[in-house]
Length: 339
Image (cartoon, rainbow, N blue to C red):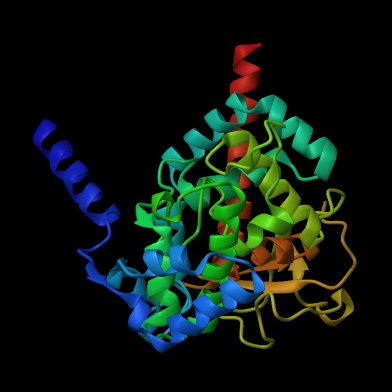
């Protein structure tokens, strides 16, 4: 048993470490030269300091592979049915729920303050952090500067986006007086418990513990920033998030599904909520989960759409919703037992 645990730990360690990187001088790249000139002219960076930074970059090939292969929507494009079963089994597990309960208990006061200020329920803030970084256990081992430089200037389908993120990252580290080479995050450059991209820091990240530093590796700042993100995206604490619905048959194909499509309830008379407590009469999204034997269908409200602003995936948003509900249920049980 001990040997098995050690082997599992070694495998996990290997999987979370970026692949061996090749060092490269990017100052010889014409696009990088243009980029440096823009930063120098418009953002008042020191040209020599930038050239020093870009002269020795570890190319993150393991980051690049995510954006050079043909795009597939996570777990949703599969040859066989049951993609939601696989996705849910992988990510909605007892350990993630248990640690979510502990996170809520540990941060009870902070979560309460976030709800009071931003109107976002504790379980949804917790679920986002649980899905994004496993409550801070896996925030990423990639050097963010190197990852963003690789993705900005090595050919891939999102070069333009990552140039913008690299620029935001350099401005962020300058503001915080940080060495860009010392910041670590995801393969795409996301940072901290909440896995914010650099461009999200200025409009959405907040100093929730009032220590004059915005640090998304700090639980308090991460909680406040997620709450602010949801609030700015249009979260409404008075409305539900989603409810399961019934329909005729096993494979629903009559209407387009997903967060990009909305329907008036009057058009969906044959699709009925299973819960009698679903009081939401505005337009809804139809969310389809591919089970092995059937399609599970849900109504998604405006709040469901807000979750997709964090990650544009129907499965991601449903995972956050289901995880939040499980955490809330188990948290209440734990509180009752302790009183």
